[in-house]
Image (tube, rainbow, N blue to C red):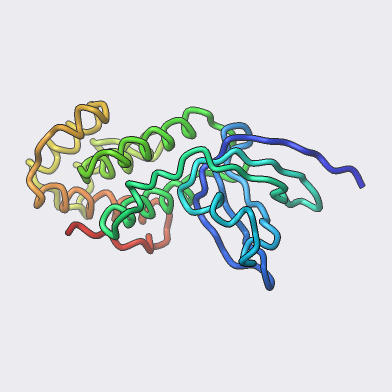
Amino acid sequence: MRSNYSSSKAIILKRINYKDADKIITMYTKDLGKISTIAKGIRKVTSRKRSHLELLNLVEVYLVESHDWYIITQAQAIKSFSKLKDNLLTTSWGYYIAEIFEKITSESEKNSKLFEFLEKTLEVLNTSKNFSIVNAFNLKLLRMSGFYSIQEISSNKLINIDDDVLKYLKSIELKRYDEIAHTETSLEIIQEAHLILKDYTESILERPIKTVINFN
């Protein structure tokens, strides 16, 4: 049997326990797109890969493809985005981003722009505590994936959207992250926009988003 070896930068999106000591780890890689991998022995206390393959970490990962699986042979964390993970508030934001990104993207469909977009979002959230970044990510991800238009949301009779919220959505759709991070918006509008985007995303996915967002 022939095995194929490869390496790539990757961001950890999802982890599921597998067998006695392994995990199935879903990651979005720069060179292979979204892939499911097996990290053998990672649940053992002695595993050297444990800390490197934490959720949301940016890693350099080394893989061998065997029996339709990618098996992680080595992993080295490049960035852990520790400030994003240092409290329950922002951790929930990061988990929300990882969940919707993992559910919207297709398996093995390479898109370096999506990888760079996800990495940039995590970098900004690691320094900014503005939830509008999360809303902007949700909106921009839908648009980049071909699922979103302001017109569709605003004309949808099932979505009751306030004029101020619509104006806010149009604003964050056009602005860069550095501009959004320094823009003050009422918490009421931010929360309402989040619920609209979440409901809209769930209708596209046809399944619920499990991550519960904390605002305070």
